[in-house]
Amino acid sequence: MNYIFGPVNSRRLGRSLGIDLFREKICSLNCIYCEVGATTQLTCERAEYAPTADIIAEIDVFFRQEKRAASIDFVTVTASGEPLLHSALGEIIRHLKQTTGKPVAVLTNGTLLWDAQVRRELAQADVVIPSLDSALAKGFRKIDRPARCLDLEQLIEGLVTFSQEFKGQIWLEILLVQGINDSNEEIAALCQAAGRMRLDRIQLNTVARPPLEIFARPVAQERMQAIAAAFLRCDPNRPVDLLANGAPEKDSPSPSEGEGQKDFDLDQAAERQALGNEILEMLKRRPCTAADINRVFPTGSMDRVEQLLAALIESGLLEKRVHNGTLYYQTVRTASDDTAHSA
Image 1: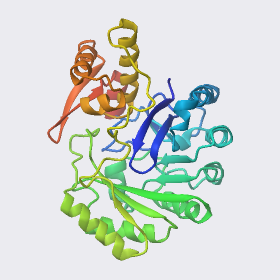
Image 2: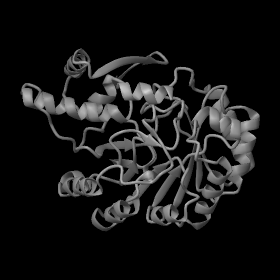
Image 3: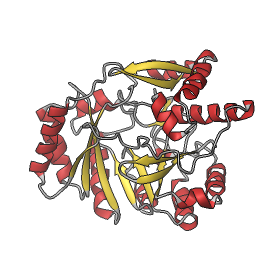
Image 4: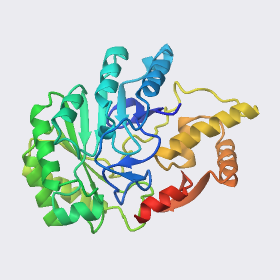
């Protein structure tokens, strides 16, 4: 499938089916830590960047599989870039609510929440997880590298307004990068901005997988804990979660990940090709280890997974990357990625 991935076992959302609205990274930001890669289209303009009918058709195909559909706890709308840029977001959420019987979460960078139409469309969701990595203009430019059409104050006002209007759960995610947005000044500004919002929880994260820029380094565990304590001092009644503190990463595979997945017979060439395609689709969205892949697509043998990965590397489709001493596999960057990266 082109737009559906998973289901994955999410620390936050249970067993979650992902709906990726784009086939390339269209976003209003080009964050230094992004594990998807460089933004290919940096924009604030909403449009139908992928055929809505095709996305809805894939949703319907999946949910006709009763056994797999029954195992889903949440449907999570996301994108290789920013999902709020899709002009039919409201229609897609409405279809999910009407036809799947599952709660809907939306992951967003929050940059378009100043737009009342976007807020109305998003109001149909059950959980919204927006991000805010810096409340200072200098830090915002350094970590998120926004499109020129964005204004940080407008962005924060949009988050504040949405938080006051929305009836569902709002979990604000803040991703911290060493030496970029982890200073006391940055944290104080973020605490002040978050204090204006009606939030159910704050979730602190750091660089856990290979980032876009090699200088995007994770914040040490001790500092993450100190920052969490600072947010709790700002509001003792609002929970603060550490998503990258020795615990499973957000949306990371768990040992039971393969339940409900298609079984592949790797003795058959067609089945090996099908599994290879599934792996490529997953790695387009985030780098993974061989163990991650084996948990999502259990084959009974890590050796067979590694053989298949080696074949994909030899074909020029995948490459290896070591991050914090761990070997990851990721899709090979295209020329258009490099162009966007240098823009």
